[in-house]
Length: 285
Length: 333
Image (cartoon, rainbow over all chains, first blue to last red; front, side):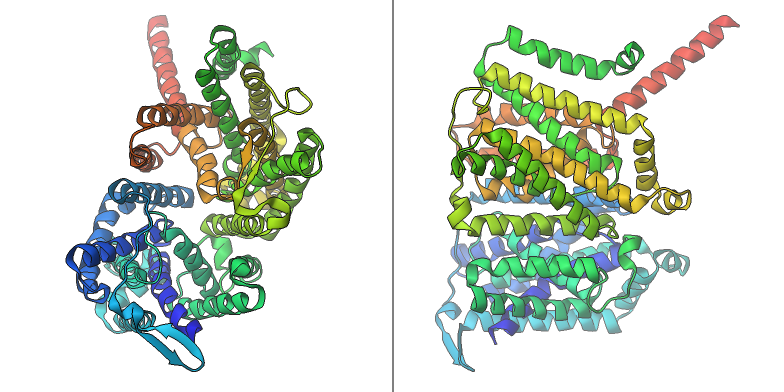
């Protein structure tokens, strides 16, 4: 049960990452930093304005969409056609920059968001968890499903999928790829920002809080096949299951080592993901 | 030989100045900065063997640094042997780890390779942090200072020459990679693996060898660093930040150039030391300001000068040379 709750939140982080990769062919190494910013948004809204994190989402989604747009226009647009290495280090530099903006602005202290939901304990199916976890999971699921629906049924979603499949062909069909990348990046960042707001009550908020999530998100995304959104969903369930099983078997301290080993094994033996097409990794796509 | 020296004027000046500084300057702070510049430069040069010359861009090189640092520290504290033995052990372990990583992630390119190296360094980070009984876990290990060359308990001046020796050695490795058949083959693999494969270059084997060699070189510096600083802890020596640092020094200086990693290290270490000194004692957040600038500058450098300092200097010299030739040609008419 707690597996599924965890998995839902990982999914929202991972879906944004995999969407950006699928369409733009860029691994966003700064993804975790937007999650961290989302956590700070929830923290300040809660501390200064006594706003519940779940209400903050209403502001967070459009706000992070805008932040994503801005990041794309200022930083990503210039390197979208550059080599992989340029892209990798651009997003790394972005990550250093954002982490330290947070450090200067908010200091390195650990901060906590404690809304009332956190104290409502639910017992079901032999497990104990709090309302905050459940609500975070439910909202994460709704957002993820909404994103799926958007990709599947709207015109913009179709255009994005077409660009993901073949950049050049999409351009030849008259698709404005720059606009597609802009929207893709903004949606991906909105998703991870929302995830940040949702997890704020569950974890400590500090400038490098994003790192642990983003490392996990890589594992999830590679498991599911980079760029594959359904794969990301399944991947997040697998990672959550490995995490929970690992904590039972060898204790919480060693559990992380399991998913990194799983990660390396998948990269080595099924680099295109458990469900993906073979051969994607050698193209570097 | 003389021709080579004339051709490598920049390097001669760089290493020459570094060698003369301890003769003139006795200020411990200044010498400390110089040791760090040379050590970070050597580490970046080691990264450059895989990341620059072979195009295997790793973001997990802290793993090999950590292996070196921990081998030396544990050899001294747990087994009571000298750190040189630890360094040897570290190199052996890193070569092995490099071979395994290089072999396993052989097929992977671009972001996939980078991700697999991150994962590898994370596995080591977790293992060393949790294996309390042997590695002292997250608390880290203080490495005792025992004066003498055998125990690597050196003074500041001696450390400068030690680091300089390593730096020159690694520079020569890079020069070899630029001039030898092996280096040209590596460049071929980096630029177009399929084409290189087609003309008979054993690309897979070459990539594995490059990663392993780079790992071994990194490990040596890790051992030296542990002895120099006198403290190792897993959160630092295996951090992603450190891996990124090796790569970024190189990128700012010039990827795939022999002197680039040292130029990058000089620039970044100097600016960092200066700003740290400026803001120490004030609110800790001020170190963050330096890193904000660092991030911003990096984004600009990577985008507009992806060939780095060495590349920009090279281009500038090339245009000056061609202009001089044009003038000469006009004069002779």
